[in-house]
Image (cartoon, rainbow, N blue to C red; front, side):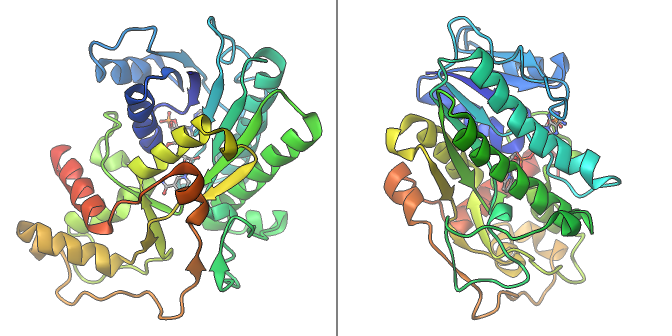
Length: 333
Ligand code: NDP
């Protein structure tokens, strides 16, 4: 298939590029600058422009940002929308997080409806943030559950703003498809904490993607005097999330579904213990007494739809953490 992938410079998107190419798809990714686009291309030497190229989309918070990007010859058959800000450096929650998430999502859908009638499936990277209800966890999280966050709560702090950005953007996407009845259907991928090797070539360790920051901080000794609270107790590997995106694009029955993609439980104590066991040279960067802060009665999760419909077999935490640390050491941690 010919695929438009937004946010090509992102941590998860880099794995999407790899898997799309491995599975024979043609990829046009969006980036904010030529510099980023060229860097990504240079990391795929020998891949012809017909298989991998980029278009510039400078700011997804602009309503018409994707109007030109969706036009292509031969035309696109699918869109993977991963671009959305994921960070907590927020001065203005609306401008920094909510607008790019929501307008970015509705903008790419509108543009596809208007100018890319050949697109039959859009896959959006939503999040477990659009599912979790931190004030009152249900016994079991599944695709049926929605984060009940309100617009008022959205602007109270950066964590709320991020979770609201993902919740409102995903809702807007489902609403768009229901009301506008475009030529395409929709699937969303809803991952929790995403760990995994950094392959986005663009990074220094200072600008590592948000979800890998905890691993970087651990191996740099920033938590030597004690690990911070884990905060979120389920995780998934970026390569499995990327495969879920591609499968959600390929598998006809995936349309119309959310997919809670998770490998299982995690805690900072467990991550640190894995690092200590596999990288003895890093032991002195970590606290001596390591234990999980995950409560016994933490919520359950149901990832069966992702296994059944998309065929995802989730990686183990130990393999993911080892690969993540090795990738960080390679960039100079
Ligand atoms: P990254 O920060 O690595 O990637 C974010 C991408 O979005 C980058 O390509 C970034 O471009 C782009 N982007 C952000 N804001 C804008 C904007 N205003 N205009 C144009 N492009 C923009 O994060 P991840 O790879 O982790 O996240 C990718 C997606 O996955 C996001 O939708 C995120 O919400 C979701 N997600 C991530 C999880 C995780 O734990 N990592 C968990 C659940 C969901 P640039 O590089 O130029 O800044």
